[in-house]
Amino acid sequence: MAHIEVLGTGGTIASRSHGAAGAVAEASAAELITELGRAHAISHRDLLTLGSYQLTLKDLRVIAEGVAASVKNPEVDGVVVTHGTDTLEETAFLLDLVHNSPKPVVVTGAQRTADSDAPDGPGNIAEAIAAAADPSMRDLGALISFSGTVRTARGARKSHTVAAAPFTGGTEVAHFAGGQLVPTASIIHRAPLDAPTDAFDHAVVDVVSTYPGAEPSLLAAALDRSDAVVIAGTGVGNAGPGFAELVATSTKPIVLSTRVPWGPVVPTYGNGGGIDLVAAGAVPSGDLNPYQSRILAALLVSQGFTGADFAWRFARHR
Ligand SMILES: NC(=O)C[C@H](N)C(=O)O
Image (cartoon, rainbow, N blue to C red):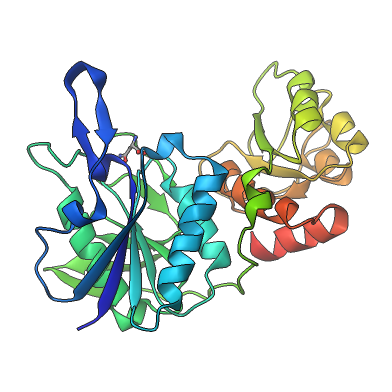
């Protein structure tokens, strides 16, 4: 019997409907686990009780610290984090970046509220606990377990607003068949970065999207107020007139990602395209989407990395 600690943060999995006022996250972790069988010893703590669309970087740090504390407890074999799905990929990726233990950390949530006719939360929590308790899920960093599939946090994204299985991407490391966890792949978890400090709470990293007619003044405004900027470029990582010139004048880290859901940034084009943006100093995000790129950038700038140090570390951990 493994000992799994369940950390509640809110989200639809903890939400109840309030008619016209909408659904509100309010259930505690204790309430979420009441109907579970007792295949494992389960302890629980509430870190937050918020919809994930409300979260700040400080909240993400609080969650990372909560996980780190649970993992340090020698009695605990694995950790489950219950979380809203809107920004689950960002929190899970931060947990992955700083996870310094072989113990599994499994993030899950729900698409239907706890008081709906057919809530999906109880099944998702039961599977997340089974994954966190399984020795084959050790050494894989932070994972997302949802609707029968366990995948790495890195590279995963919410890609459907209402589907019961809203997450795609990452590397699928296991699925559930007949109620049993079936490992399907292993991965190499990168060496962890230092945990976020309270400087992370105040890191300002904006995402600037590009599209036909996008004004470079948006990038200029973001550079003015931010510690770093992520460009969600078109295609393999391109931007329109005026963007590369601005990148060249900036001393702040600028990451070049893509607004395309899947595939890497591959600097290919001149005339303001990826070749020019990278020559001007932008750091390609590889396969990381703009929002996970933003989390890595925020962590690095909050730890004082800029210039070549930022670029080197970003390339190593992206
Ligand atoms: N399904 C969900 O959990 C969505 C919710 N709005 C949240 O992210 O908190």
